[in-house]
Length: 116
Image (cartoon, rainbow, N blue to C red):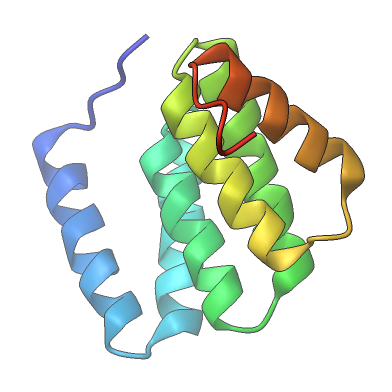
């Protein structure tokens, strides 16, 4: 299921993404979370939120956000996107064996045997 934001919200997402790169993470995160409340199924928003958490040094929250993204993409059969989200999660929490195993399974599913 593809989700498309209305134009004004799409423009707001671009503006908020710029804030993230201007080191205004706290305000950008607050604004992103408000936008997420209006669009809970938008994984682009969750991705930006996860990145903001990570840049603020909030690894646990970033890892959880990446887990939600990965599980959503996996459920929707977007395996490559799920792999990417799990890889981001592993960078933060490499000790999570179950995520490493899930990542290996997805690599094998798409024929990326060397990465597995």
